[in-house]
Length: 388
Ligand SMILES: Cc1cc2nc3c(=O)[nH]c(=O)nc-3n(C[C@H](O)[C@H](O)[C@H](O)COP(=O)(O)OP(=O)(O)OC[C@H]3O[C@@H](n4cnc5c(N)ncnc54)[C@H](O)[C@@H]3O)c2cc1C
Image (cartoon, rainbow, N blue to C red):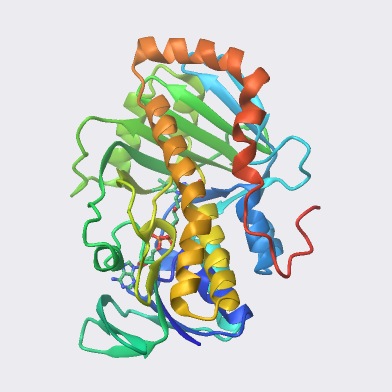
């Protein structure tokens, strides 16, 4: 079987790798010449995503490129502890969440896909497809075409494939939050902990990463900020002003050596179908889930799709079975992402109430309430290293 994958991000590279491992011949078309180097800040993988990577044979490389994060500590704006929970796993799980630069994750997956025989073509922007009874033809800017048995749309939140697969799908809308992230040096931070502070002007994440501190401010703002012509120094100055009353955040922002371009967060109404004929969606093209699970969900999709294609006798059966397997879980993830965004956008009164509720809720119910996130990943084919 020949497969065309549109997009060489997490979902596209993982799909190509999973397909190659099952004997399919895959070509990945990526719009940018080198997105691996230009995709910004850090990303955390929960254990469900890591188990998927184990099945793909990439777990060790990802662990080596990133930082093991055992705990997640939550703080109020006043710096008071609200909760302390295992990060991205159940407490009994020896496998720890890993945080790494997104470009490194994409680079590892692409390299593994290439080594498994996938053909990666960079600088090719997909514009549309046409289907015949026996195949599907993708079209690219500049007039190039390519045909295959299956086309996988892994082209992210601003997907072109999505509107062709489901013409009723909406467009992403501003989520009321934007994120500025950076790398600080010379600040003492406990290693192995992901710190999430519900700051007065937005959630603030920070963690020790070797000798550096990686941070991200998720700033609640009713209108999308204007980014044109704003320098990185200006973003740092704005963050310093927003977190001025908060000691830890202020110290980290002041010690910042590098700022990544701000990212505007978007939401998308659920896409009603992820398949049409010989075309199918994976990753953010199908469902930008957020909730710290977007990359893990993209990896799960990739494996579930490759397994479905390998098991079914027709493309139609394969895509139906993939969608039936993935949609219920993704719907739950989308609901969780909505709740998390609400918590990050709360005003001062709601924040205080939230902090009180969380102090009570977390010790009693957190683990039970989040267990489903970590134990529902597609089971790996080749995985042997899922516990260390
Ligand atoms: C600020 C922020 C923080 C996040 N933090 C986390 C986190 O901690 N943990 C987590 O799991 N998730 C996180 N996520 C979500 C996660 O990054 C995404 O869910 C994940 O990257 C989705 O992967 P993808 O491959 O579907 O999309 P992308 O990574 O966006 O890749 C899509 C690829 O398709 C290419 N492309 C687009 N259009 C075309 C076209 N027409 N032709 C060819 N190629 C095209 C793009 O260039 C890109 O390379 C975060 C997201 C944001 C915005």
